[in-house]
Amino acid sequence: MKKRVLIIAYYWPPAGGGGVQRWLKFVKYLHNSDWQPVVFVPENADYPVYDETLLTEIPEGVEVIRCPIFEPYRALRKATGKGDAGISAGFIRSEKGPTLMERLMAWVRGNILIPDARMFWIRPASNFLLKYLKDNPVDLIVSTGPPHSMHLIARRVHRKTGVSWLADFRDPWVNMDNADKFQMSAWAKRRHMKLERSVLKEATVVDTVSWYLSSEYEKIRGGEVKVLTNGFDHVDFEGREVNPTDKFILGHYGTFGDDRNAPALWRALSRLVNESEEFKNRMIIRLVGPTDGSVLEDVKRNGLSEHLEYIPYVEHNEVLDLMLTPQLLLVILNQNANEEGRVTGKIFEYVATGNRVLGIGSVTSDCARVIHESESGEMIAFNNEEQLYTFIKNAFPCSLNQPLNPRVMKYSRQSLTDALRANVFDECLFKR
Image (cartoon, rainbow, N blue to C red):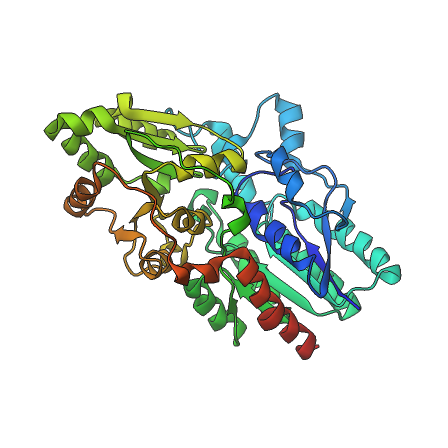
């Protein structure tokens, strides 16, 4: 008889973006195992981006239960007639910089909406689940954040029922990437820290996506925090053809915020354009995903505008086709306290393409570890213009798809789901 696991999540198809992929793929492979997933998500969520194609990834027969949610950002748009994309999409700004409204909402987000804008869902969602579980018991509860309100829903249900609970951290909480933009007061930060600590202490088992974040959270928890990285789904790449090109493409896929801007990269590319007519005629900078105005301004400032191919958003299925084109794939880490433990989800799909990867950020980071293990490229420090210049020059004129390193298969979604069942779920049941 299958064991039942309740997964409390905010991001779920038709939501797009990186936040939906982790548990969508886990559910896909859990469905055919000895675990029966039940997914709990908002009924009327206000997602920043949508990707209808991901609906086809949900296995037939998976139970998805829903409860209405109050979304303050949606209410703000109705009240003002304006959007709030800067808050919802990782603080992506126009070239003019943040507006007064955006700065105000950032302050509200950090000091009033604690732990996040989904705080209003905690009580109604947990009440809904407590009623549901009376007639539909489960063996395990999983909460995945951000938004970290999902953990507080699970905490309340766990306290009331005693059902084992796995808290899954896809990103940090108190030391979130945009923490400095929230202008948190000392009181607000203490409140965030208290909630984070309670989740880390009370959850039956805690896991996260990087080795660095695991070590940081182990100090707070006073016990083990398991590492279960993100990964790639081998099925996503089956049957896709590599499109040949005579262009030399430097491709970045995903949100490109101001804290990822790398001026040394643009200067190195400008030098290569000025030195080589062939490089100038063949080089394309492809930025796919919401991109901050500071990045676009730096591209322009370095005389690279005519080489820019900017696509604000495409669905995941199309992103994979674009990634497979022979090119140099860019992964740039956020320049903040989380840089060492920042392992973006796209790095695993990057290495699965067989294309060369150029990482920019800490050379001792967990992301650098993945790049080196996969033998797919190199991580170079942000300000090392000379090394960036040399690496790109040596990669030109082409960066063809190479066979997948067998060691990378441990990052396949199937392998990661097997590890989730054997090393995480089973321990949750044992500790109960």
